Image (cartoon, rainbow, N blue to C red; front, side, top):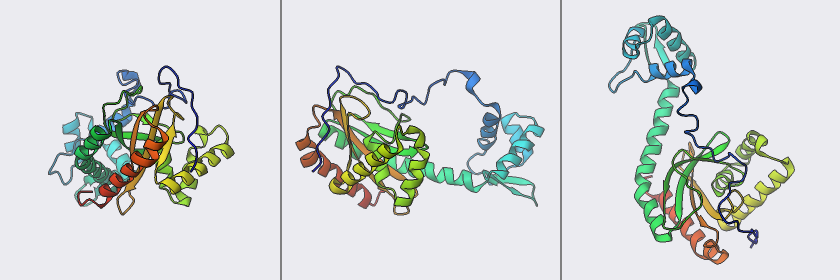
Length: 280
């Protein structure tokens, strides 16, 4: 059994890799950050209402208030990108495969979050620890929901909060769920986060070995001082999306015996019940 790293406790939580836990609302109030063309494209996609099977440029222009010439360029671009599909006979557009796929993903996430919410909150209440549900988004892990326990934790996370992949339990659990080919691709995409490629790969291999031995990933102060976290991945049978459940709290509570004898096995059993649940 591998030893937990000895960490010197700091007086308060300190985030490593400054800025990695970025607030998605950063610069949200700065209008100068808005990309006008993208905003207009999203306006056009948002013009579809429940029950609309297809719309023409005239309807798009009416609903968005955009000039018809602008709408025509936007719909052409969206169709080229697969977000709209064009019917040449009727000269109308309907949602394309990429837009429909986004809807399916959003619906699946909403269903999962709704079904898991009471179970996750109960887990947080019973352990007193903070519980999070996350997915990978580009080069970071993204919290899509959180549940608070009674433990005082020095870092507040919330839906939309991003954390790094390599140094967090959530990210390490995600990497452990990948096939060898998927892992190789992912590590290539994470190259800019790596200080030393060989050391980073060795760290990933060691973490994957820990996961294979114990069934969960772990991070003890590797990203945030004085916070310990473990995590497990799960997915639908089609593996269209890998989700990760993380459980964390102050490092003084995350003792070796508590993690390996109680919390880890309990989290694995909880994950298994989620995967086997008819609601998933």
